[in-house]
Length: 267
Image (cartoon, rainbow, N blue to C red; front, side, top):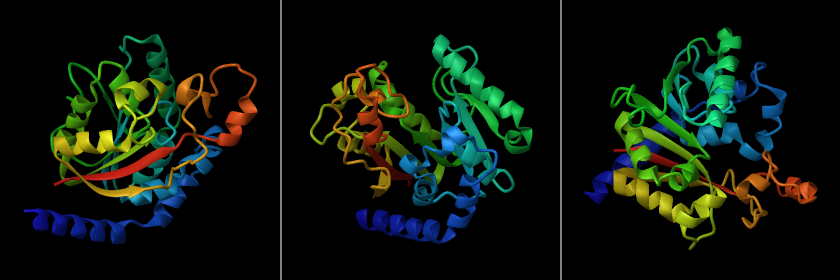
């Protein structure tokens, strides 16, 4: 059985490697509709390399989880506009948190202000009597989640339930791309999640237990300068720069967090 699984993974990697045109992604990254505030983060988030590693194609049906203020949406929408389909699962206008409801409202305003770029983007509520209930099972070619796993752990430890919903909506052979602040190996993720960090081992084991298969790891978004020991956790670093200890220049010099970049497939 393991030999069959290995063969499928090898075939999948071969197909996605040859099907991904980095030029298409680079053009989307260079889209004139992107905001200057987001562009300056490219040096830390490596969007073209990250999306190419995940094997994205412009004809895919892609689900972006909790787009926040739309950093990756600004890239995914123009990439998928003509041949594919982008669906975004946001907090929703009825979210119980004023802060998250405001983020959602600002995101929707951004989409509505540029119908030429975002007019085809489908919008769903992420959590409403469960997760992703408005999305049909086995309907998505790719699910992408960026820097959210720690919140699903620290607020009710619902990460497993969330990732099971990703598994449900993905097609067989579909890709799950994960970028997450990375805790030091050997740490307790139930504790480090409060600071924004999760260990690779914890996350990989959880997803493999659900049924995903890890098919690739990348150090595209690694940052060895991140010591993970800040007064406000990962939010001490850019872009949040929380706290006022007089050392913001030091944190800017560190840059954004050390991040794992993982690609899974639903076999």
